Image (cartoon, rainbow over all chains, first blue to last red; front, side, top):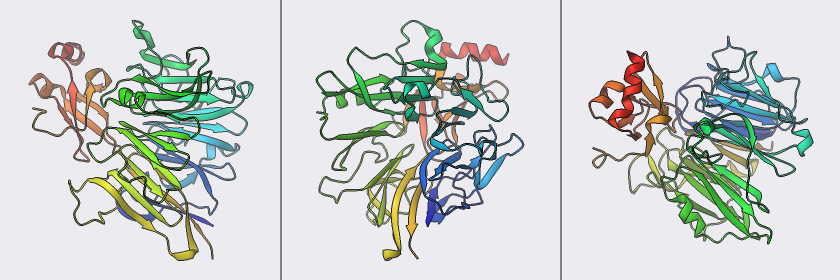
Length: 367
Length: 75
């Protein structure tokens, strides 16, 4: 059986522990299930997850109906089944600031919540979902199904099985498409297909707060990075100077102001804002980490029996400092801080997840 | 002013949400709350938005003339 541990920012009940006090040590989230969680996503103050049987659950604030719950429900202090959509089985989810996207196993794309910048993708000037949720009418089934879905705080990108890439939401920084002189493209109210130079295929992408990095493969199977959006931290140039190998590249993840490349040996390379220790502080000599997760400005990594945190941890999301000589300040974790160690052979860490100053560790327990 | 304060990032004024009733600009903070700065403070030359829930701060990028449309909105 499985359990979910959490710590961090909790003003909106987004940890699912029943109250809204921040947690600085790992605490059990209340979840009426012992099934394995296969996907988690979170916004400002809400958290969604999918269980292995496809059931969608959520906790946190529902003030904008971002939990797909009835508008009369202000919040869900613990993880509850999303009853409005309980007839469906889900395969993936993503959350932005005050909205959520959930994709069913039969490729329907539901959205809920609020967004003033086209976040819902439902059409011009539609800022909130009526009837609890809306449905984005891009025919995913005809495009090979949703392969990847990612959101930043105000925009979202889907890649389909046929490798087409579609996007919608806030484009004020050109993070989705170059708007040139066409100011109307600063907000993309419904999904548009993103164009790339001929012969380029998107392998993966990462969405920072107001930029996107695409990892693309050319006709000769070479990888390169494409940067779109505002670049406050010299990410585009530093990325371009890296050699990306098709043989070793595994995936790209992001915090709000940094990106993190993971290779096939589970090593991680970080580029971007390091004002609070956000770039990965481990070395290549460390034992490889099986699981990685990046939140708004902190990260998690784990083996089967130890989980560590790094980055900005002001709300307890990096746990309590375990190193006495912390070099900077209380909120900066510029080293790998031990967040949790399993209870011997009875527990195994099976996944980690990080949100807006929230951290979650999924544990498999054997009796 | 920003030289003395460690700011987390710089954000352009067009990215903030303006509430004409409260006369406050806000923008998402990584903690889940929002950075805030009042129109009045910006008219006085202030450019640091603070989060009520944590220590992070952002520098607002704007020109004084950018404030005109918001002042009109309030009026």
